[in-house]
Image (tube, rainbow, N blue to C red; front, side, top):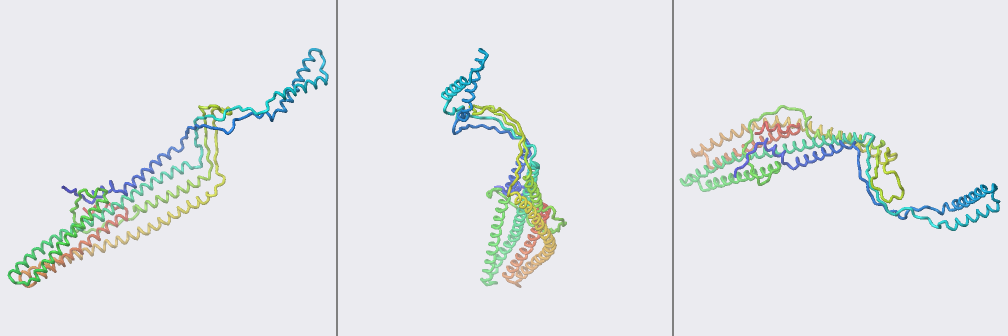
Length: 459
């Protein structure tokens, strides 16, 4: 099966597409953008459908008993007045007081007798209502603008968080890629050493047959060759594990083919130093501070009144106990005059801003310190790598001299094996210093917010 070859740049791009942490940051940003879009419409009117069924405990009644005396008295007086007016029209005289009293008392007795002794119900106990309610914000004390601004700032924080996640993923991929390159270099060197050990073991076998060396020296060459082969197997297993970790960071299946054959770049160049103003974590904290300031503005706006225009139209009204107009319009105001938590919320939002300032100050100092340390380490590791490079090249000469001495019977097989082991250790020190140097380069670019610049130094 063919394996996909990846450069560091391709690994980083793959990680940006598939890494779970980045996907979570992208989803968070998308959520914030949708909330921002939603808040852009919060100044539009809200239209609700209102409908309901209502059942009252008792039907509405007319309290006739409360007005009974007035009705009876009024009706009796009205009867006396009507009789007197009719008599006066016919005779030209008024009824006598005695007759008027009789008419009054008789009318009062008759009306009292027929007057209901209960309160009659005038409605049913249940009724239905359905209508449309419109509510248009007119003035909310700056809450609408503050909420919109908060949503905008939350989107900016989401972008900063995404950038921070991308930088961290690219940084971790770079470190792992450097580890794979280190193992590639060491595997290549170890394969050459194993080849030399095999040749040395064959040469020892020929010397043993010629009875020039004793058996124990031949055994030493066998053991040394086995150790070399074991080291080679361990290096290959380490590479497999490093590739698995790299696949995980790239967000691809662990079963997917992946091969990286690049070796450590031995050309050591110290990059031009730059400021750390682009640090992703620092930009995220700055965005969080602006978000805290906007939250404080939202909190302050809660103490101001809210004014709405309202409209209500009831298009379905069945069996109403009282007949009211089907529509109304008006203006309503809501103003919280006393809120025991208001002061605490304001103080908390102010404290959040101060906390953000402290975190930014702390992070800035930390970034400045890390940047300076990285710059010093780059210079130090460059000199160290040059020293180890000279040392390992010297071991090549030493190994070759010991080999020639062995061929002239001036040194033993074990001496050659020891020289090869020394050469391996020198190679390991050199490549370890290269790993350290390139790791510091990756760290430096990560701190300064230019992590992908590492691809200019790593193929």
